[in-house]
Length: 64
Image (tube, rainbow, N blue to C red; front, side, top):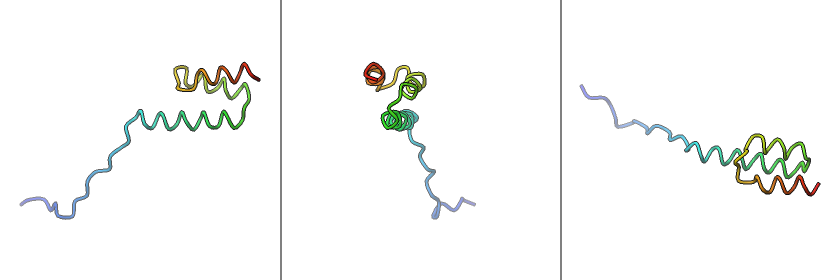
């Protein structure tokens, strides 16, 4: 007997980890910009020491 595949649904595809990570980093960065405090920028830098916005966070800290 063969399995009934006529109504089978494909398994959901999980997003690639790096895409999810980038979305999270962007959200954290957006929050940091909204708050605009040294503490929040430092938190971003601790969480994402090699992040996309490292230089921008360092510049923001210096400007405060």
